[in-house]
Amino acid sequence: MDWDRLQLSPKIISALGRAKLTSVREVICLSGPDLQRVTNLSRSDIQQLLTAAATACRRHHPIPALHTRDNWESGLRVGVGCPVLDELLRGGLPVGAITELSGESGAGKTQLAMQFCLSVQYPTQYRGLGSGAVYICTEDSFPIRRLQQLIREQSHLRSDVPQELIHSLQFSDQVYIEHAADLDSLHMCLSRRVPLLLAQGLVRLLVLDSVAALFRSEFKADDWLERNKQLLAFSSTLHHLSQEFTTPVLCINQVTDVFNSGDNSLGPLSCPVSPALGLAWANRVMMRLMMRRLQVTVARGDQSSVLRRLEIIFAPHLPRDGQDIAVWREGVRGIGGAPLAQTHDLGFNNK
Ligand SMILES: Nc1ncnc2c1ncn2[C@@H]1O[C@H](COP(=O)(O)OP(=O)(O)OP(=O)(O)O)[C@@H](O)[C@H]1O
Figure 1: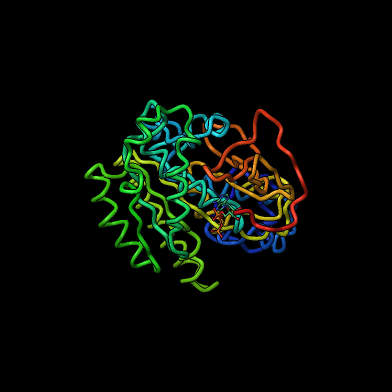
Figure 2: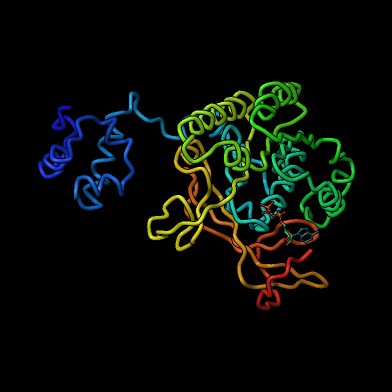
């Protein structure tokens, strides 16, 4: 390999020679710490080397995410149904793109996902898309009773929508629930049933809860290559669906512990967890959101909720930002306006 073509410093080139690394392929197959060990280069030199190697592998110039589709710029979004959170997300979930929502167990991911399944049913002037949602469960059964409660409480959540409109919508008839316990059934669902629902205009939102479960359970640690191949094929299917049918795709993800939280650019700042499935998956996601529980409980009337934080980790159209939220009977809301009574969280879940 002619390392000069990569515009590397002489120090890096001679370190590569000493380490007997002769191709870009060999370089990108090694992790940062392994490269550091075999070359004795500093962390910033390794970063420079990896960036140059990745650039050399790229066949086409990258297309800025904001230019990928006209419909992205059309501004169509599915709102949360809470003005504070809609402002944070500049309208909500964008169509034609994959949004990931990750967080530890009990963070409230399913609550927010179900709320989107109801919001999408409103007409566009109320930040919906006038259609239903398909919700694919890969682990737990769908919390149907909680969905029914959210439906009953819609008029409390959506004070911006005329009551007659809320009562005229048949919310539960427009949420299609699928269960996929393994990758084969997920593939069948995404290649047959979901396109049919989308093509018939019955749904305009796809939720997958959760994406990590199948890829974590079906592959062992040394099957990483096969796992990444399947992950890329699966994410391409999601992209294709989201773009062909101008549909937002919301993927719920789990988290893994981070040992070096100083280098957690793909997760929340100073947080010991990071979304699961690594870079191969992160690169397929347009917008990454994260939810986490804080050690405080807030009260409102006869209800209390553990305080949470919803953070934007990355998105091409949004700054890195966050908002404190709570889960109430009517759904997930941002904490804004009137102050709420606060107590320290004793670790109980608030139903
Ligand atoms: N009826 C309700 N009223 C108020 N809060 C509720 C209600 N039902 C659930 N919650 C809150 O939502 C939390 C569960 O949230 P959710 O099921 O969305 O978690 P999750 O992030 O999806 O977790 P997992 O990854 O384990 O599925 C409960 O701990 C509780 O705090």
